[in-house]
Amino acid sequence: EIVLTQSPDTLSLSPGERATLSCRASQSVRSNYLAWYQQKPGQAPRFLIYAASSRATGIPDRFSGSGSGTDFTLTINRLEPEDFAVYYCQQYSSSPRTFGQGTKVEIK
Amino acid sequence: EMQLVESGGGLVQPGGSLRLSCAASGFNFSSYWMSWVRQAPGKGPEWLANIKQDGSEKYYVDSVKGRFSISRDNAKSSVYLQMDSLRAEDTALYYCVSGGYFFGTWGQGTLVTVSS
Image 1 (cartoon, each protein chain N blue to C red):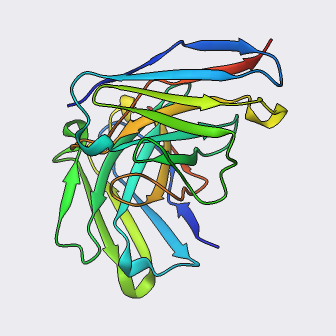
Image 2 (spheres, rainbow over the protein chains, first blue to last red):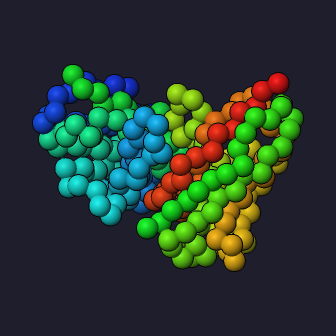
């Protein structure tokens, strides 16, 4: 099973700043099969990124993903008020599919 | 618009059973892998199981293997999760999601509470 470790646990930033979230895998993620999700309180997760760097339909271009192998990054440029949420990475390189523990982006 | 609506959650005693249902609409259901994902209070999501378009392949996380069973009915655009031998640690919000790899569309979830 691939274990995903996200860092930091919490990121305190102001609107307009850039957020950089990390996701590290316990073993190489084949073909960069890594996705990112956003979750707000009381809501289901929302799909953001697949294949490490491809945005899902309707996702603003201030969200970008990068990385390969075992190290992946989600970057949110110019944070908007609606971007403050918890973010999860997820690998689909192997079964079982696994999620990271999440990074909370909070307003400073 | 793709939509998934779960039902069937509730309070059940340890060792009991529940069957969750998920009704899909707004897309060609029979063309998609489908999955179930759960989220315990204050925790991250946990993938449980997925099922191929024709139901010929099913995969499970070890923690539910032998206790949970995923199935689908393409004629009804529905996917199901039969949960037996439920434990306290199965208490969570259960989501039906589209896809077997990454998860593009999520339902609103149905709450399962296992407690005596």
